[in-house]
Amino acid sequence: MAVPDFQSLMLPLLKISADGEEHTMQEARERLAKMMCLSQEDLEERLPSGRQSTFANRVAWAKVYLTQAGVLESPKRGKFYISNRGRKALSESPERIDIQYLQRFEEFQEFRQASSKNRTEKVTHSCDSETTTTTPEETLEQAYQQLRDEVANELLHLIKSNTPEFFEKLVVHLIVSMGYGGSVKEAGRATRKTADEGIDGVIKEDRLGLETIYLQAKRWESVVGRPEIQKFVGALHGQRARKGVFITTSRFSKEALDYVGQIDPKVVLLDGTDLVQLMIDHGVGVSSAAVYEVKKVDTDFFVED
Image: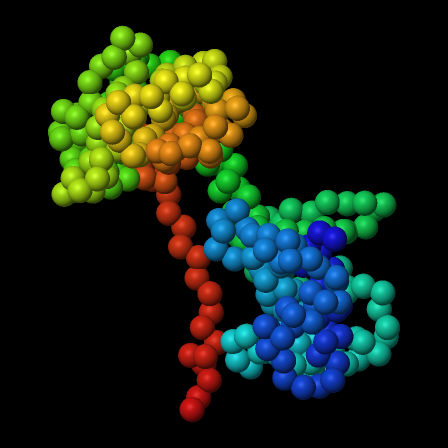
């Protein structure tokens, strides 16, 4: 099954603490995973940033909301136990504990009012009932991913509408920004124009030039097929090169992708999507519009020895 939303994890998490013992978040995640019959694939699903698993993030926020409502106590980071209010809540045998249920507690109302000034939760409705919400991290990262996708699309459009000479300079800057080629000047000297106005050249893999990479780029609209890659591999053999990178503004056919997985030398294919993502990652053709630093409370700081 898919990873449940964080509201659906609230009641199961509270039930885990029903024994009155102090529990760790690691223990809670393991027990919840078994209760929910989550597969390894479910547990490995990650937030768009890749920094945290979706499941761990949702369990953590389920605990935060229960703690803010006073049904759980969390005296130390990563640990929690049930409160008297939590015991009373379980004694009522609720079918579900969610945001709507927690609104009955004044402390939770205050928490929601304070957070709503700076954040809008994504809520979907089914049969006139609140069903699914994203955690704050998911909302933030989804917005970030949307902005990143928009930037990527604009970059690719600008690259395709520019000149072949510009594309040559762009690829050189990108390769150097990734740590290859030594410097822009050295990498520029290493490249040479070809009849198809692409880029062919030998680029340093490291600043000492202990290994070299053969580079070819095609500013194409049509799909790059296996025959083009075979020509590139032939050029590699002619140069006695062991490594090559083929960059295109379009995309590669399935036959081309399958082919490079079966050959030696090593060939890396970068399509238009890969190209613009690398540009964003390495700051080529983009600049930072805003930086948001997300803080978390260090609960251990408030524990006296």
